[in-house]
Structures are given as structure tokens and as C-alpha cells.
Length: 459
Image: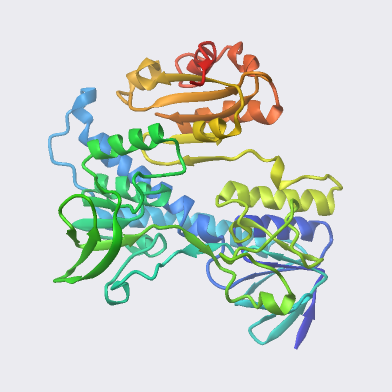
């Protein structure tokens, strides 16, 4: 049995539904295929649920600090984990249902449940049906990386996905991986009440960031009681009673840590290993990411790859931008490119880190004459008002062109304030445009013009 379409979209992550709807409204008969959860990672076990859990954890944290603000709470703070999970599930359900109804209610779009595998460059098999189309868009996302760690097959472990089913408080959560996902879960569960130890093979956490940023975030998390074991090598695990024991070769003692639960947070891998890409002739790199050009086109004409699976971005916002790029080129005669976008992301610990452009290390590597401005959050009125003065703001500027090269805003509302810098970078305007702009008082953003007025050469 076979069915013919104008377009096939494989996967309902961030890029897929928007693209399918756009294609359908353009008059193309479109099939969108999903093997599991409508909405993909972001909606079901990524951004939306984790940030919902982070909000609950922050509520507990603020409640415990009530006396700092003159608010007296007589009884001890207790976190009801089943209710925390129920709240998260309700928020996820709204998003999941919203995307499902959107797809099912759009003319020319057919939502098909099942696993899609290529039969050729113009056809995919779903269940017992062959779907054929002249245009196929791969949007299959990624999943947690499960390493070949000695002993791992013999112990229970959690990933970012299975953590979404947790409705209890781990006594001592061991987290393997000191990067973005691991650190968010670390602070979240510490605030819920767990003991937390983060184990990282590298000499510092979030190695992508400048050392100063890594050190500041580590200090913030340690102040909340999170323990770190860095330079962990030859890690192995085994059962120890009802818990998990982790052995490691480190420069410091103890060489073994025993926890109640184990969370793996050491990166993600693309869901491309069971798509039959070889039958379509679609090329992947050594890590399994689909190779694409600047417009998300694969090496096979008529096949595109969007989102995490193409290795050109690992965020919801880059996935959605892939959709915008494909739609603009295909439907609007508006040439857009992946290389036009500026790297930007956030680490949603509290306080958050908002990042855009290059790090100081990357700027130094270019050899450009650069200027840098730095301001501690203790100078920011909004931060002092909230008694949240941890962190700092830093901006890097090209000394010759006066254009901003990058920024790191670690502090309260840094994930929002960074956008005024990002927008200026996107416009290609000199930093003086922002320096001379009047911002609202009292906000975090109001200090950015002041910061830009005190730039110094990068030493």
C-alpha cells in the first residue's frame, strides 16, 4: 500500500509542526510523522518541563529565604514531589495538546503515528504503508547519550527523559556531567532537598565557557550545598545496597561516592541511526549528524534536515530558525542561511547565564584588537533589591569596527537582558548605539549602557 504526498516531514519537534503547517497553507499535501510524543524533546522532556520544575525549585528556595525579605514562615518548608510532577505534567500536557490540535486542524496536513524509515530518496515506510513525496524534511531530534561506562548495565540510571517520571525526592543524586543539563538538574534537586554531587571528567564545569564564568557558577552552586568532583577519570559504577556506588580515579579523596540515584547528563546523540538513511543516500558525519549546507539541504536533492539532527545547533531556538530558513528559501524566495545567525543560548541555573556571540577565549584566538567591559552584579540596583547579587556582566567589542563580538551576562534576569545586546549584534550597529540608549530604571538592562561606557583593551 502506498500514498502520495507533496511533502513529508519526519518528526514533530520544534521545526516540524511549523514547517508542516506552512507547507499545508501553501497548498502542498503534507504528511507529518511522529513515532512517540508530539512536540518532541522541548515540549515533553526538555525545555518546557525542566523550566517548569526549575520554577517549583525556585519557589522552595525563595520560601526558605523568606526571613531575608522580612517574610516569616513559621513551619518548615516541605516540597511535595508528586504535586511538583503533577504541575509539570499539566504544563506539558497543554503544550502537547496544543501542537496536536494545531496539526490535526490544519488543511492539507495529515498527522501519522509510527516510525518512519527511508525506502529510497523519495519514499519512506511507516508501519505497513509506503509514503512518497518529492520533498522530505528530517526533524528527528536527539536523545541522551548513554556511554559505555563500566558497570552501567548492572545499575539503574536516569536521563533527562526518565527524570520526567520522578515523583519522589532522591536522597543523594549523583550526576555525571558538569554541563548545561547536569547543572540545571543539580540546582533543581538540591533546592527540592536532595544531596547532590556532580561528577565531571574535565578540570572545570561547562568547559565551553570562559574560566571566569565556570568558576563563578561553580561557586554559586557550591554555596547552595552542591558538591563537585572534577578531573574524574576511569569512572565506573556498581550496585551498593539500594543505591549506586561510583568509583573514579581522581587527584583527591574519596575515590568512591555512594548515592541513592544516578543521572547521566553527558550530551546527546542524534536520532538518525534507525532511519534507513543509507537507502536514501543521505550522508552523516562520524557522530551520526546529518550533513547539511547553509540552507539545511542534505547531499540528496529534495531532502532537508532540520533541528538537532543536523548538528548545526542544539537548541529549540536554532531548530525553529532552521524551519524559518527552509521556509524562506523554499516558499518565499528569501535567501536565508544558517551562518547568518549569531550563537546565543542560556544556562538556566539561578541566577541564569545569558550568552551571545564569542567568549573572551574565542575573541583572543582571532587576534582582533578588542575591548572588554565588566561589571559585577553588586552594582545593579535590581539585583540588590532582590538580594541576588551573584555574578557579573561582560561585553566584548571589536576595537576597530566598534561592533559587539560577544557577551556573558551571569546574574538575575541575565537570560532576558542579553537580548538587547543580541539585537544590536544582529543589526550590525556599533556598541555606541546601545551605550547612548536610555533604558528604564530600575532594571538589569539599564546598566549595560554604563558598562559599555567603560571599555578597556583586552589584556
